[in-house]
Every structure is written in C-alpha cells, then in structure tokens.
Image (cartoon, rainbow, N blue to C red; front, side):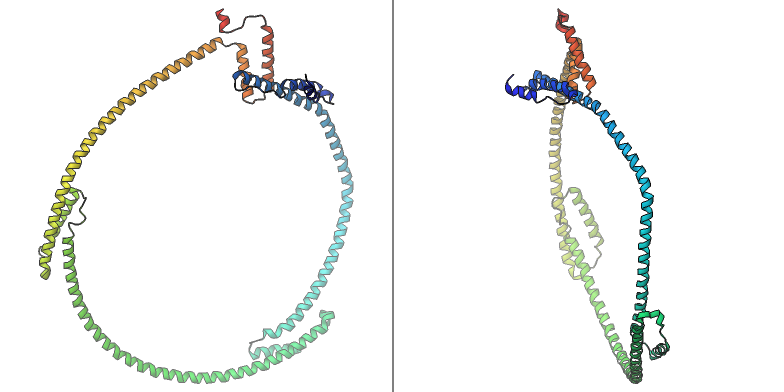
Length: 434
C-alpha cells in the first residue's frame, strides 16, 4: 500500500465509537474501490460493478439503521425537555394574562373616553360652523326665485333671534353672518322686483307682436294655398299626359326586349357545349326543340329573318357538338375497358405475390417459436439454485431496489452455498453428463 492509499484509508477514522466498525469497513472498501475503473462494456465487468455497488449500498443502509438507533434516546430526552418547558410556561402565562387583561382594558377605557370627548367637541364646533355656513349660503338659494318667495324669507329672517348658548364662542360670527345675509337678500329682492316689472313690459310687447305676426301669417297661408291649388291642377294634367306617353313607350320597349330575349336565347343554344357529355348535349337539344315549337306562333314582325337565322345556326351547332361528343365517348369507353383489363391483371399478380410472402413469414415465425421453446427448455433443465439467486440479486441491483433484507439473505445464502459446495462437483448440465 503506498502513502496515498494509507492517507485515504486513514481519513475514514471517526471519533464516534459506535461508528468504528462502519469506518473500518469503509476504509477497506476505499482501498479496494477508490479510483477503480471497471470495464462495464463486458458482461463480466458489468456484473462485478453491480456487486460493488451492492456491497457499498449495504454498508450505507446499515450505517443509517445504526444512526437511528443511537439517536432515538437523545430525541426522546429533547422532547421531554420541550414538553416540561411548555407546561411551566403555560402556568406562568395563566397567572400573567388576567392581570395584563385588566391593565389593557383600563388603558383602552381611558383612551376611548378621551376620544369620545374629542369627538363631541368636534361635532359641536362642526354643527356651529354648518349653521353659520347655511346662513351665509341662504342668499344663493334664492337666486332666480319669485319676489313673493324672497319677501317671505326676508320677513322670517328679520324676526329670527340667534341663541347665544347654541353658538357659544361663535355667536358674534353668526350674528354678523345673519346681518350680511339680510342685507344681501334685500338687494336680491329689489333686483327681482325690477326684473319682474321689466318682464311684464316685455311680455306685453311680445304678445302684441305675436298677434300681428299671426294675422300676417294667416293672410300669407291663404294666398299660398290658392297658388298651390292652381299649380297642382297644372301638374296633374302634365302628369297624365306624360303617363300615357310613357306607357306607350314602355310597351314598345317591352315588345322589342321580349323579341330580343327570344332571339338571344335561340342564338346561344349551342354555346358552352365544348367538352360536355353526349347525354348533356342531347338533353340541351330536346329542350331547344321544345323552345322552338313553343315560339312558332309568336309574332316576331320586323325581326322574323333574324330569328330564323339564329335558330337554324344553333340547331346545326348542337348537332355538330353532339356527333363529336358521341365519338369521343366511344373512344374513351374503349380506352377505359383496356385499362381495367390491365389493372385487374396487375391486381391478380400482386395478390399471388402477397400470398407467397405471407406463407414464408408464417413458416419463419413457426421456426423461431420452436427454437425459442427448445432454448428455454434447455435453460430450465440446467439451471441451479446459485444461478437463480445470482439472477435475483442482479435484478434487484438493475432495478435500483433497496430491499435490504432480501438482498442480504440472498448474499449470505450464496456465500453459504459456496462454502458448502467446496470439493463437490458443480451442478448443471456438465455434472449431469459426467
């Protein structure tokens, strides 16, 4: 062992006597595993690495159990100290709180009484100030009111006597406000009386002007009504003449429009047929023949020649498109029949190929299943107790399980099995063959 290894091993020594065995075991594991690189890319290396981690995990969980066992009495003693301190504190508080409650209740009463007196004084002063403000604002409430209302209010104010006890130290302020209010209302009363007199004069002049205007308007309405009656008779006569002329013009326009619409319908019968099916074109021709039959007795007058040319040209065009469509459909039907025969042959070929592939896949599946069954039977026929235990331990390590009791039992069982089997032939297929 070199100096570096000795230093690392010594660093695991502990001052806790109860942990001495664990520290010694850790020192041994440090010497064996510290800095060790395991080739986990091989099955053997991976198995050795899992065994190492299992040994280290066992030491760690054993240490945790020992720690809990050693600490339990200390935790119980601390809980006893806390509970007793809480009990004594509760008794002290039970004696302290009633006295403290009395002190706080008296202090609250004194403070509440002080606040009550302050609030009473504030409300008293506020009430006086509000009363004085009402006196000062009274003139503004009478602005625009009739003089009779102002006179009544002024009479009541002149008779009002202020209570000195009510206003106390603000009595003179209230008295001055009342005197100023009376003087202001007296001014308002005189101004309102002057205003009302002026309004009566203006109303009398306005009434006379209204009477004169209404008389003039009546005369003007009568003259206007006579003028409108004359204009209405002239307008009615012109409207009647215009109506007769308009109806004659509209009748002629309607006649020409009807003829033009029929001629346009006849001329457009062969339009929009390019690329249409023979059935569609034949249906169009049938409807067109019905249209021509229905209009045989119609009087086209000066447009008769134009009607004949349009109907004959459209009928010839429809026949041309119909013949071309029938020929195109015959060729297309032959092409589709040939294509369908080719596609059916391809579908038959693909079905046969798929059936062959399915038969091969089923045969391969049966062969693999049979090989797997034989391999499992051979494995079960040769497996021993030690192989099963090793597989269980490896499974617990791979899954990260921490079932300490199961892993410990299996570990010691494997050790006992190894010691008991020294000198005995190995189990398994080779031993059986021997």
